[in-house]
Image (cartoon, rainbow, N blue to C red; front, side, top):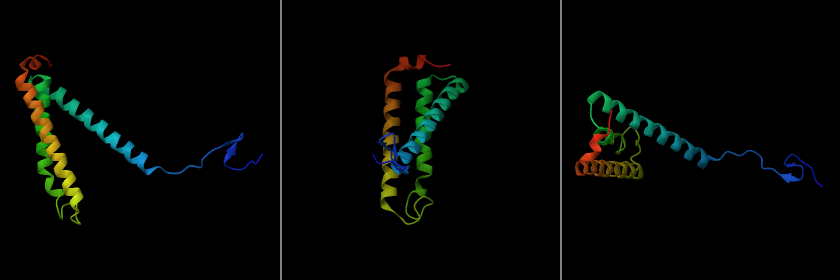
Length: 123
């Protein structure tokens, strides 16, 4: 039986190696979680402050998200803060994110208008 630094009790163990893909996914999950918490917070506080239902307040929050992306869109375009080299993939990803956010906002508003009984829930 051979014993060295990487075997313990006859079982091989791997030395520690960084996993950049896992770290990136973990960072993305944290960002998504914080964003979700922030949206829920805005929805609840907005519902309380403006005396609106959760559905209507959430629909307004989706508009704010789209508006915020439109305002900062120039940062992802050629020569912008996030894209000084003019990388087309950064620009295309930002535009795709904007389209998805806009589509989601439109769907939420359609649901709020089509189902007025959703307006019964709020603070």
